[in-house]
Image (cartoon, rainbow, N blue to C red; front, side, top):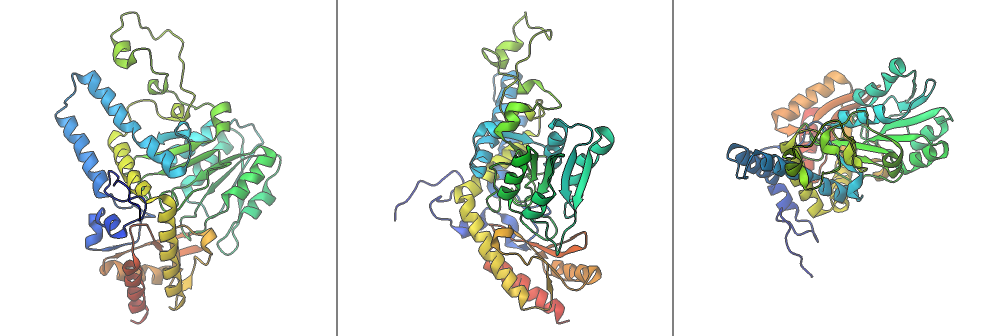
Length: 413
């Protein structure tokens, strides 16, 4: 078999070594961690990269503070090519944001609304997905339209049927946070395209675990602290060519300007500079960033965490997640629980939810599991959800089997 040179993360990209992957997450040594949908674990390489960055902050090696600042900007930018690799898109479409909330607000404030426009959502969403668009009702006269789920599902056909000429945007999570339903984004994109509606997608419960569809999506965002295995305060925004050509951000910063001749160091030491000048901004997704000093340590950690999953390959990671998910679903079907994630692979990412019979009993189950150091969550939306397990690419079959055994022991009490 042909071999390849190891990447910076130490893994062979041709064939995933899942033991090597797990070794990058020290927290897995003393627990079964199945709660990436809440806050995930930081891999060793990312933690070391942040430490090296902080060491440089404590004892800078640059010629002066200006050069030090430019170096920090370069370190932050290292996350962009890793995001582009993860998504399979051109780097010019990628911006770095502070969170999913930040990305959603950029979309809400950049779309050109008119009074009477409608924005289409569903009642399975996490509240933050809805907030920036519901607020448009009072600030722009936009009407939010919520579709009701049936059995925990609002599928692409339901969105397509509800889109009208007044629909200015469709806002949807690629994977729902409480029951793990993954929608057919390509089909929704096709329906949006027919009326020229903008498609805004929250991918925070999918990106980093299984591949995410980007074709036809205008705004796609994900915070780093869940399946991307990065700290809070960082994430990405992926923009369509249509957004880059037709829309402008609602805020501006100097670090989204075209780099001046000779670089910023030369610019700042030029006596003739003045704020009374023409400002030329980059035409890439970068112009939608804050444009000032941002979360540099978070971006560095994001870059290293994505380097790890990219060394495995997101499709290979997704296959692993889906296989473990099948193992968990099969095991849950043999237990006396209500399976909330009843969907086939084409409608799943990494979230598998089940109920033991109601909120109080689900809560007791979670407490029982946590006492055994099996980490899961408990989430509901519009009557769906329950005990939520997050199956990530750093998990293995033993994690699934320990969860199933612990649930079985709980039910047998």
